[in-house]
Image (cartoon, rainbow, N blue to C red; front, side):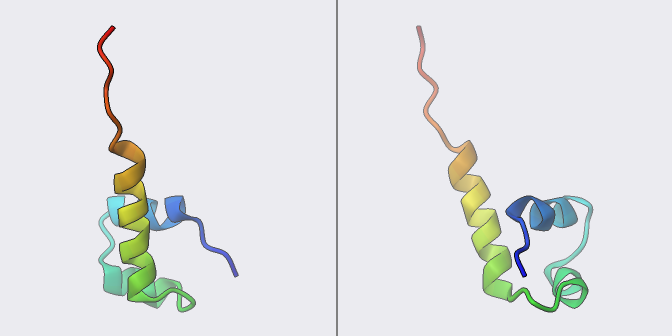
Length: 51
């Protein structure tokens, strides 16, 4: 089963704790939640070029 990073991030943004997400999605592991947050951090961390 595949769980999208956005689904994990949406649950975190909605206020669920990592433990609640793991209860809700038993196929996930704590490392998967940390990896989702790290992925999102890398995606939004981009240089801004001034014209």
